[in-house]
Image (cartoon, helix red, strand yellow):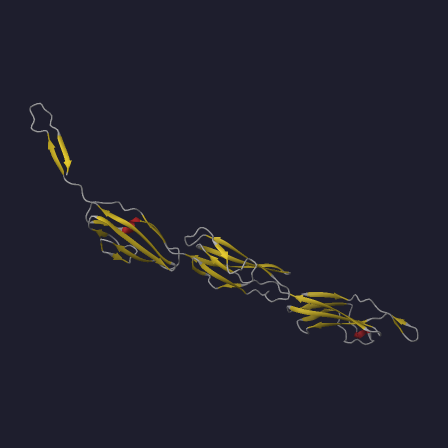
Amino acid sequence: TQINFNNNTINGCFIASNGTTSTTTKINWLVSPATGWSVTSGTLGQNPPTNSPATWGSNTLGLTFTQVGNYTITLIGGNNCANDTVQTPICITPQPVPAFSLNNPAGCVPLNVNANNNSNTLNNCVAATYNWTVSYTPAYCGNTSSWSFTNGTNSTSINPKFQFSAAGIYTITLDVTNPCGTFSVSHNVDVKQPPQASFLSIPSSCANPYVIDPTAYLNLMTNCGTQALTYNWTFNGGTPSSSTSASPGNISFSGVGSHTITLAVTNECGTTTISTAVVITNPPSAPVASSNSPLCSGQTLNLFSTTV
């Protein structure tokens, strides 16, 4: 960054003992601290200057700053009467390089996430402003955004805290603004949840035993996470009575009544348990046939059946 400084000193007037007058003002420049800058035009001058103009500073001084921070530019002007001094503070701030990290970039709903702001504008001589926004992409069986700032933080906090209450992919964006402009950076948060599962209704039967493949009645089976699912089947009154296979195959149920099938399916976020019933009914009673026999010639035979 290059900055030009101009001497606007109002010259004084010195009257010598012999009655001659002089409006000559000698100036010199001082820059503090002594590092982080260089003179690119003009001269600082000698401190203090002598009567020789070669030791005076230039009326316009160009400085290039190579390090961020606070600087003080001092202009000293004087004649044989006295010196006067003026100082100008300069703050050199960097172009923002936004950066942040997340303590929980992936997890299960509800997910609490803390953002740690690592931007280069922190503790700078010119305060930057920070703005945090969140966008949403449906994923992990979620289709609706649900999140909030927590612990008293908000969109302008340096290190905000978030809670995500619905599954999906949330994109956190940090905008950092200072006199050099606005710059942005983003990171994703993957919010997962337990599996989703449901059964279709199994038709009742009078078959005894009643043999079914329970996986044929799974209406929905979605992971909603990233780790492989595990399964735990329980078959009340069935043979076999349990299984840990995703597809346990045919299960034979015996005995009139209702038999419960229970499936517990688990991923890294938890277990979802669903159940349905297998109903075996009594077969219908054998019918008893009867007729209007005996008949006389020419009469019509009528047959009847009843169940006991």
